[in-house]
Length: 193
Image 1 (tube, rainbow, N blue to C red):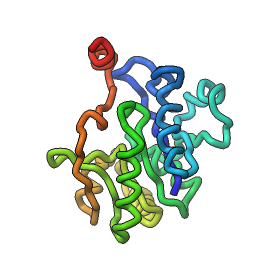
Image 2 (image 1 turned 180 degrees about the vertical axis):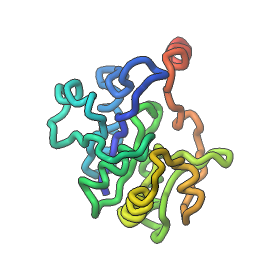
Image 3 (image 1 turned 45 degrees about the vertical axis):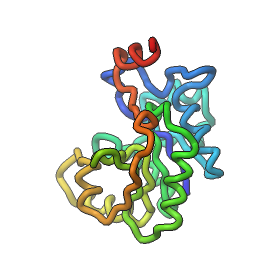
């Protein structure tokens, strides 16, 4: 298994690259990387081509995986990493989930190991799936690449893809761990409390 910090979004609502924002002395990307690394798995950083100059100041280039797949949304980063590591299962964590903790990630990893034969492993809260903190097995990603390669679409809903599959969900115990910081206003409100 390889940990993937997803940083390649456009951050339009935030107004700046979320992965480069700071939490304490670390960037959001480094913060997410550190949590995944505590699971004793290698970790890579998923970025788009325009982010390479800034992220090269933080990471060795072999740790950076640049988007190569022609789809939109989070699948672009996930499947691009899969192309580099086609035989490895991937644990995805979005860089803007800064309240995520290691125990929650450990629970996800444990469920993945004790419940084999699912296409996806992810958390769920009040019926809403959390695909940006999930495990994606290599075999599932290989099948997904074939579907995308034969489709004329460039945007796919991760929720829809997962719901049409054999997936394992874990009920969220602490909702705040799954907060996504997508806008500057949301972040200001959160940090002023």
